Image (cartoon, rainbow over all chains, first blue to last red; front, side, top):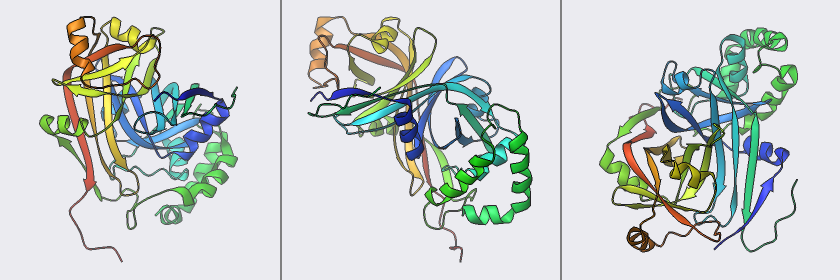
Length: 139
Length: 196
């Protein structure tokens, strides 16, 4: 049942982030916690995603510290990994937003999600779980 | 898709690229190498066949609370969001069970248990998203976390068969008592004539 838990290096965490299309962002909205799944891209040292201009996520991301999580886990949790980013989210305008377009960021939720948001990757931690196998030592 | 979008605005992007190189904001520091990298990655953008960027192809709609509870029960894992005592927001994947309209988790000593012992307000999210077809749903429960200390309730929860992923010397039950349950579904819009 229980897997062996290992710690992912920063480089491994970034690789996982870059390879994955969907993550969940946690913010505070009206003093209440919220989690929203978003599709995203990694660009430089930021996570970029799109949302509705003026919407809950846009308001909650304006200069706030947020958490962003990506994972790939078996249903029983015995195999897989998860990566957690904590960083400052900022709304992108002008050239920075166009840069996000250039990064190929299309909102899975479709039309009208023209507010680009960047989370600067600050704290980056990751864990992996492997069932019944000794984990390779990671930094 | 993306190439079409880029073809539509090459001059604007070139101007943007120049601005990006000199842009001093914290989020625009990667410069020209980023643009090259982005071009290299275009083929990795995944969209359903025929899906257009910014197209009106998808609809986001609310899910009624009753259906939210049904959907919650279909998934083996969710994500718990809370604030660690350092004030830093955290999201962790967890397995869970639904009992009497509460979310039940098991955890050993650590930040999750600490947050529950403080009876923090937490968010718990479950989803099922298919990025290829751009469809899926997400349900979020906001509620108060608490540690189950009564042995009678512990025995009752034992019947759920909920096993913690990382078993430690002692595992406590944490219950999230909902204050709000909300769900959203992303689906394809009504069929339209296919673009040729």
